[in-house]
Every structure is written in structure tokens, then in C-alpha cells.
Length: 444
Image (cartoon, rainbow, N blue to C red; front, side):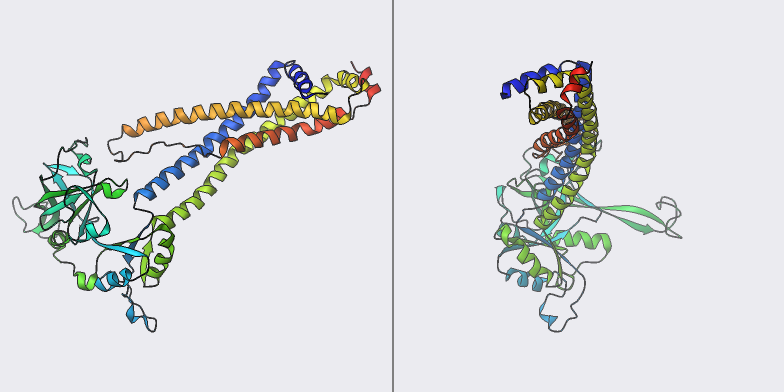
């Protein structure tokens, strides 16, 4: 029997009971669609998390922070002692593979912000030695990359990150040369009395908010990098230290306390892990986007497998429908099977006929499920992205997609649907092939 004969015979048999065929295929479609949607949820989470990790810095960078502990092991006096001081910077620079170190003093947890014409600039504020930005590899597209006292260098997209009091974005045109304000606030205690502030706070007195405005001039705009550096304002480290001193009444001592963070750039991503291990051995905390990327990939793979398993369960349940359909076909076509065997059809040929019918049901259902799943993902992305765009507090870098179907899903869906369908049709096929010819011919 030719393959074309198999297909012709299979098609005629499948179209005999069209309603039953549609319902059986629909069960496979639902299972396949669920696999696509569930894995797309996990794929979307993984994609957006990985994009955020990559945006946090280059994959050849390492973020170093202080442990705050002094080494106690014998012979450990040569290490920086867990403090990001000049000794730590010099020790890290001598590690093979390190090409640059950028010390940072952050205003991350301080009540301070930069304002442009009274509008808030939502950006990370980092103080650096003026000569370090260019050494680290930051290239200005306008102006310079050396912020002196009273000057700032802004990332490529900082000018887009200006918001008015209503939370509406108001981009700044041509910011180079403009004078913005570094605004810091603190709570001060005042004696009680009329107009003294908030009554009842601080015992006998009250409290009032004081504000300090420091004019800062935009002297440079950096080239776009596609990372969080595009949304960073770089200040002279003395301006940051002055602001911290004004807010807390205490000036950080870089010589004894060190910087808040160091950014270390390696010559290539292949050297990140070895350099990271060397820094960790110096009693410092070292993390890198590359190491986070590895952890995220492992965790997200498990999540996708769990979500995909939920869809596969629905696909397996659809196999029960296929088994029922094929079993009913053997009862309804008993006489026909007897005729086929009487004219010379062998048992393997009968098995192939029924397995082909079951396989076609599974494959058609899988392909339709992939189509419906793709459509559901597109509609879901359009709806969710439109909802995100309407949020006033939406991120400056909204995700390109909330749902993302992993590339391996279509192949897995098709293969599993075929395996499940073929497995479901195996018993009916074997039962049909083993029918007694005489008994089958006598059947009504």
C-alpha cells in the first residue's frame, strides 16, 4: 500500500464523524495553546529580567561593595580589610585582566535629587573623582566627561527623564550648558512656638523641612550605552560629600571609610569570574551581571519547565480523547477491518492506518494550538503594554514585550502532541489489527 493510499483512506475515515473529530482536535488545540501561553509567561519574565540585568551594566563589569569587616586570618594584613579605600582600589587594579576601576559615592538613600527648572530629574546620582569617568571608558558626545565642583555629566537619556509635578514627562532640549539644581532636604528641630513647625514632634519643639539648593552646570552628555548609565547623573565627589555632610551633619571620610561602591571593568567577559574570585578573596563583596545572568537563567529554566508542565498536563488529557475516538472507530469499523484483512491487509498495515489517523489528529491540533497560542500572546502583549503605558509611574525603559514564547516551544509542542496522539492510538490500533477475520465480517 502506497503512502498516498494511507492518507486517502485516513482522510475518508476521519471525516466520517466530523463533530467527534472537531471535539477531539479541539482538546489538543486547548492543550497546545495552554503550553504556548504558559511558557510565554515564563519566557517573558526571563526576557525582562535578563534585560534588566544587562541594563545594570556591561557583562564585563563587576560591582564591588564593602563587607565592613576587617580580616582576621593570619597574613591578611596585606588585603584592603573590607573597606573600599585607596588601598583597595590599587590592589584591584593590579589584578590581571582589570583594565579600569571607577570609585563611586552614591546619593541613593539620601533625600536629594537634581531638578531642571523646578522639575524632577529621575536619575541615579553618583559622585566620582573628575578624572575617573574618561579613564573608565565613558565617552562624551557633547562637552567633557570631567565634572569639577558645581558641574555634572549626564547620561544619554537623562534629559528624557524629567517629570513635572503631575508626573508627566517633560524632556529637556539641549541640556548642555544649562544650570540645574542639586536639591537636598533634611528635617531640623526648632523651638516650640507660633510658626515653629510641626507641633508635637521632638518633645518641646517642632520639626521643619530645610532645603539646600546647589547650582550645577551640565558640562557633558555621554554617548548612549543601553544600560542604567544612560539614566545616571555624574557629579563631582566633593559635591556629593558636601551634600551628605549637610543632610547628616557628618562628612564621610574616604580615607578611613572608603567609597560606597567600586565598578571594575575587565578586558573581556572570560575574565570576569576569575577577577571576581580574586576580589572576593580580598574580603570584599563582588557581584557581576554575568554571574547574576547565570543564576537567572537557571532559575528561569526551572520556572518555564514548571509552567510548561501545566500545559503538557492538558495536552496529555487530550490524549484520552484521542484514545476514545480511535477506540470508537475500531468498534464502528469492525466489518470494514475484516474486509481489509480478507483482501490481504496485514496486521502491521492495519496498525499503521490507525496510528496515522491518531497522529494526524495530534499534529493538526498541535499546529492549530500553536497558531491560537501565538495569537493569544500577541493580544496579551498589546493589552498589557497598553495598560503599562497608562501608568504614571511606568519605567523609563518599558519592556518590549510582557510575554515571550521561547524558540524551543513550537518543536516541543509538535513532538509531544504527536507522541501523545500516537501513544493514545496504539491500543486501538493493536486491537483492530488482531480482530478475527470471520468474526469481523459477521459484525453489523
